[in-house]
Image (cartoon, rainbow, N blue to C red; front, side):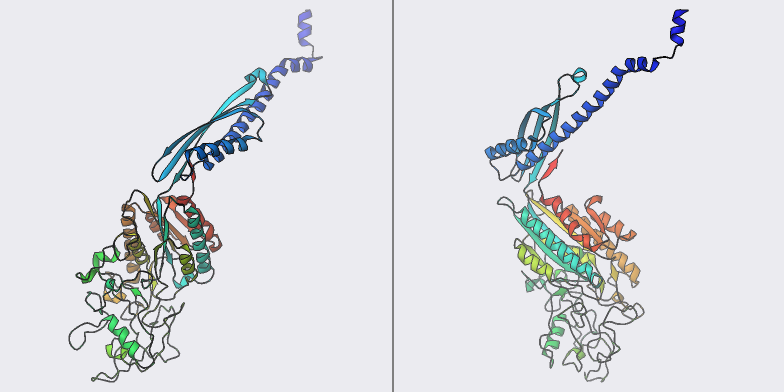
Length: 523
């Protein structure tokens, strides 16, 4: 009876229950506090070790300097973490000719607040690794300079290129050769810069592509582009009108290859880019000189000629390039160019360690209206710049064990063959001539653009087969087609960057540079 009353009584039950639960409550609080302390201590130990191993993983360091740097940085990093007792660190180095890999382990005791649960202290251990690869770097920037890059985009591209070049400068060391190249492109690429050699060029009209945009001459031969430039330059008042340096794509399989130019194989030579005068009167103020999809955009001569047969020739008459009667030409400055050098950008700067030269060239990049976007042509020249064989010979051998080859490609639009599809030529003049000439395998602009996509991917696959790392960037053009094309073109899916805000472009270029220049923590 007495026991039953005691059990039924509620007076003082809370105190009793609290007293019974108190050890469990204290144990839970103690467990939470000490677990938190252990986790925080392990993070602090890991951060201290990461900083120390980065400071001691430079290939140029001697073994003694490396060990000294590790200990000094580790002790300095850990000094403010008083919860870490008896810290110790061990270090191992794997040093090759062009790399250094380091591994380190650190341990410490952690002072705990609730010793009755864990003991006076708990032992924690962490590991870290770092690598500095000092492979020589060959970096080619293949950059869209088409008319749609005008304004904020071309400015951002200049700034971004400078930022990447600055990071490349920081990556140089006595043990590492760092070179870079610049390949601006529109529909064609300008090769008339450093290291240019006339032997690459079809100077005398032997290539099967030279002169195909013109009727045969009276002697049955084709017109030679260099002769047409000479005719213009010799005309009254036309001094200084010469070939700027752009070239057409080569015929057949050589169009997207790095086959060396060979004078005994005319199909391997590069045909000088010569945009014919479009039909119409160049003196007509209503003539179009911009990017009009409805009409011809490059009428710069009078169609009236005196060639012994009539006094009014068609637009393809070769005679009208000799001492022409009318002049409306501006092919030296962008963005709007009129004349045989229409839409020809600034020249390629081949691989060089002179980063100031590249900064200067990058600052001179600008948009160039007309003719459309041909990424395959820009990439093909990027490949030729990296190749050890002519036309450029500064690149190391493909797959050289001590060299990393990098391509950074940027475009702000889809590949496009531009111009008046309702006219006989079907397009503006491009690096593949006119769309109507059949070199695209079609006379439909949309189908031709998709063919350029296939050529672009073909070059990417050739580069990747040579172990070239490719980073692709689309600027305000993350379309489904571009996402598919440049996602496949990039070495890895994470190497494709879609940038919507031009002001963010310098940061993206720096991030990309960091992926192949900086000392990095590794697992």
